[in-house]
Length: 136
Length: 138
Length: 316
Image 1 (cartoon, rainbow over the protein chains, first blue to last red):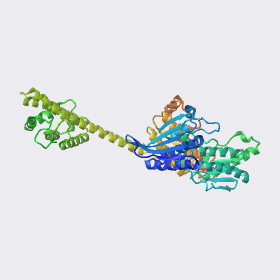
Image 2 (image 1 turned 45 degrees about the horizontal axis):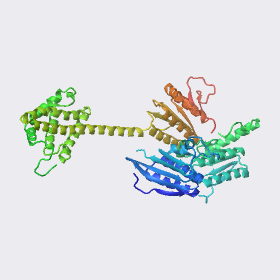
Image 3 (image 1 turned 180 degrees about the horizontal axis):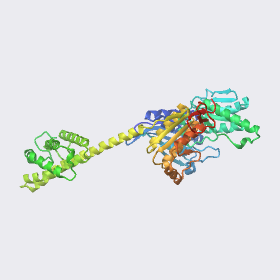
Image 4 (image 1 turned 30 degrees about the vertical axis):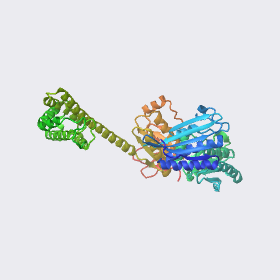
């Protein structure tokens, strides 16, 4: 149940990725996450925002505090209309790298958060949704 | 962020790289270039990268550190990374980044000590005629 | 909860209320006797006087609360009073080491006690008897359930608090020697605890400039895959900082579990005894413990006897 407007950031270049990190850190701190959890969120966001820049050239990041019952959390969506991921299962396995030797960092990012959803269609784009919940 | 270059100092035959704030991808790429250029220019035998002020290390930065270590080694320089913050260590482990070939130390003092030991070892081995590439990095 | 002249629906018949007040002492006598004679009652825990006095308070409060009240809902202020009374009685019983369900059973037992009295009153009208029995039963059931649930909730709250306390009551990180620290772990490790433990350990390593951290798991009864993975994660994080992590206190049962679970411990240093871990820590920090002879000098070839041991650093 979302009551507020998400914080939206267009991602096209390097500086945008930097902006995403800063805004995620602020949002995580405001949401009440401790120091290490804040870093987990920022690191995961950095990986996924960079993916947008590298593979899709441009996309959108949305940050939104959420609730589930009486648990509070932070939800971040990474959306692009890029080429899409041909084999999601493969991309989600550790050790997978593209020809450039850079993995998409997906399995690692998933380990940093609690909920991780990914949708992708070839030629249409990719949407990744991550959520981290406060331990209460 | 790219207005300030990461300071690189030569101390004895060690190149001291002090990363003083969170760096973006562009700075990362640039830094790698500069370090290698400086190794060549100053004939440095060792590189000490101080990241005690770095609050986030993701796969891009992690890969830079690994790459610098590998490339420096090819240019006959040993590398040590010092000052990884505890929270950063935790996220790196969770990300699954192994930082291959990167030795680490708690702080600059320890880092320098380790570098000296390694350089001494290397000299000894070479004097004895041993093969250089028998052991890498760590 | 009504202030007009009509009796609210589901309120007991005024005859019942009157009867309950008039026959109060007989009811009390019967109720107490029933309670004392019941199989689960422990008379050594409570005095006859106290039982008497509590029973009287409850019965009166009960009668007051149900007079002119809707027993289907029991929402009025008069019900707050009786609920408060039940909570007080329950607390007193708990302090007297009665079981948590004691007060609930105490309330339920009043139902049985009242039956003969109601039968007496409504000999002439079986339908009315049935109605009144239902109403009183309902009211007492609700009150009995209320106190039962309250007691359980209270216990759960106490347990949660104790768990919280235990989580915070963590073992201190001990500085064993220069640059060597030790963290003894005690009890079962869950993900939250292990997380906090790891953060604490890493912070301390940086602050104390510890080259070696010994994680002693002698006090950890079981290790499952998840815990083992956390320990491995901790060791790797320590290594990243530039220090070495040794795990000690690995006994036969944990060793078996680890092998059976197929957990890969390559690169992880483990020892059975803490002392072995400490010995290794000294080696790793280029230090050595040597005996000294009676003149106070380090004795290279000492053989037992009256010697002290002193730690010698490999170099300043």
